[in-house]
Length: 105
Image (cartoon, rainbow, N blue to C red; front, side, top):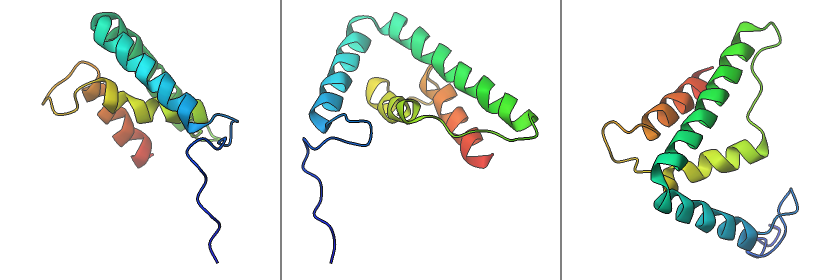
């Protein structure tokens, strides 16, 4: 028998419920709409930092580490904040290149 699916308001592994995560995503979306240049610069800086961490991990003998849970949540939200349909986008292009690099490592 399968365990029942958690309710949308059930706490997740970090103690956050889906409603809180949805509210945070909505707030991030509003900020990205109100201040697209600032939001784009900050997310791009964050993606480049993740890429640097991945490159350093690949160069080390111990190998790369997976992104943290919080980093994975932000990676999940990026496509909702910026247009992924653009052929070239200042945030989504580096985002997609990072994902490809991380998955191929």
